[in-house]
Length: 154
Image (spheres, rainbow, N blue to C red):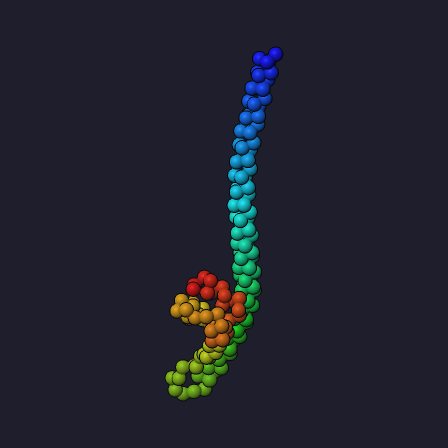
């Protein structure tokens, strides 16, 4: 009987040791999972911040595209107006040369309006380190256009 109780005690002791080992292994696994979860949560937060930044950039690009489109439309209207004026000046000049005795050539219309920014010059200013406010003030750009040019060429 004593032999049976001793054997039973050894089996209980063995089960207890095995339970302890399993508990330690599970605890270590839980710690690793907690660390991995923390890293993934941090990476997820970082990715959401990047996504927000990309969304802002996209909104700026869209806004700048709308402004560029409106400027192109204005420029197209001005160009058509210039063509019309040149045609009128050529007609006037051709009729006046028939009445003039000299060999004067007709005077062409010149557009001295340089209020619209030349993007080449603006890009050079950006590359020289011009600020967004300076581009807006000196070149007549919108805030979105200035920000886009600084992002692309600064």
